[in-house]
Length: 201
Image (cartoon, rainbow, N blue to C red; front, side):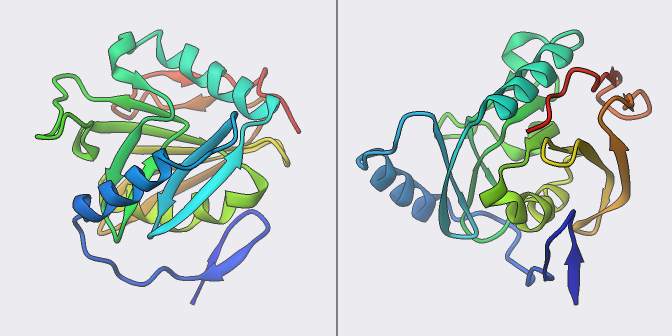
């Protein structure tokens, strides 16, 4: 079975254990911290594979726009960007582009943010890692029961909005062209995003 993305087909992800492996992830991240990662690159671990991707201007402008719109409802301490959060599956340590946390969120025993507190994730597509955003990361977010997952694609000027996670997959998948509002008032996010200023690349 294949998974449909916006331009890429891939095999359906295999079923993974529900809990991440923090000790192994910690060891991988410790090694990464000792490596010379180029400035302006985002590093994360998806299914045990390390990915580095540059942040282009359109990428950053979209992240900033989403962050600013979330701040109309969420206090600053509940909106994160590029911070490690371990998600369900085998060796998933993501640095999501934008995350909104639930009220009353807590840190785990190691002082890290918990996936159980994530209400919203947005990822802005990079050409080299788009397959992750549409595949294993989407699966991990659904397994974690993240209520809203938005993918913004500056290459085609379109957003995909995934809601209603059940049984490790999202039951709702909406596609909207840039310029159309993203109405999340019926979700825990409780606001409507404008996409008029999302840049194309």
